[in-house]
Amino acid sequence: MVLIIHHHVLKLISILITLCTLSDCYDPLDPNGNISVTFDIYQSTDNGYLARVTVQNNYLYRHVDKPGWKLGWTWANNEVIWSMNGAFATDRGNCLGYSGSQIPHSCKKDPTIVDLTPQVSQNRSENCCRGGLLSAWAIDPLNSFSSFELEVRNLGENPLGQPPTNLTLMAPRPWPGDPSLPQSNEDNIIECSDHMCPIRVHWHFKNNYMDHWRVKLTISNYNYKEKLLRLERIGSTILVSAKKQQLTASTALNFQPLGSKMEFALFWGIDFYNSELLHSDKGRQGVVTTEILLEKDPNSFTLRNGWAFPRRIYFNGEDCEMPLPDTFPMLPNGFVVSSTHLPQF
Image 1 (cartoon, rainbow, N blue to C red):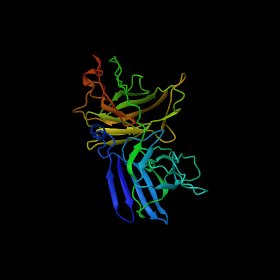
Image 2 (cartoon, rainbow, N blue to C red):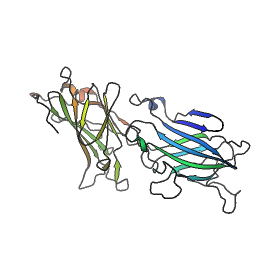
Image 3 (tube, rainbow, N blue to C red):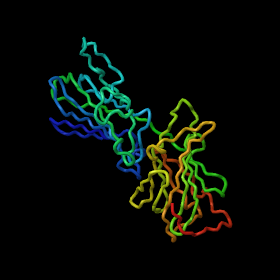
Image 4 (tube, one colour):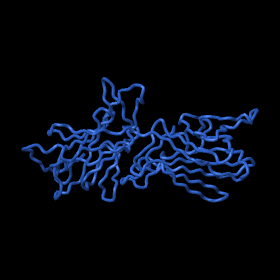
């Protein structure tokens, strides 16, 4: 996470804060991904200053889902949050030194800030109130950030104010996937769950054409718990192939090729159609499916030894630990590959 302090009177201060181990932080598919927090002191007042805080998700395919982010810090002196728009402090703290109607929004030395929900009509600010949710930058850049404004008073001996310290950003992690492979060689399916986790991803090879090949991708939600969200966001699924494969079409999901050699493909739902993945119940299974077309290099394409399967599957930014390649389904004995021209959609 990156903290950027803008102070229009003095100078620009930039602080890099690491919130994870080196092995967790670096992602070869998204080497520049991070979450930045900008504390912009844009105006001085008689008693303090006004600031705008922006939380920006710079990850390409990782989003912040419910219950949303929480932001905390420690004041350098005895500052108080006099008022706030677009978010709120969870605890007022000790404000015994103030009386009457002039009570600060929060007097805590180390406040925790939570985003307002979209339904709130009062105390809003520009680009606020997303309920703590941040979309992935590559999927929905307009909703990948959230801002709120605050008035800070009681600055002490420094009339220009000092930025807060000990910044802490708390955000939920999505469910990881538990992959498994079917025992049958008759069906080309990879499962990204053994029902210990609620999400399963099927990668089903369907057709082999002269210049392309077709795959059916199915994402299933096996969450049966009524107390959890009735609608689960698809967010994003990223599939990584071992060979360079040019993705040319997807029938029911948005997609974007990634990587310098286009060896990765990012998929996410279409707004107002399948951007949310329904939970399953006794009479219905929550499913989203699409068919995708990939260009084929006749000199390297094969169905043997699991070549047509992805080597990595990520769901909502979580890496599914894939089985070894020699456990992938093999081409059945006697199977004849047909080479036909690609039909029109």
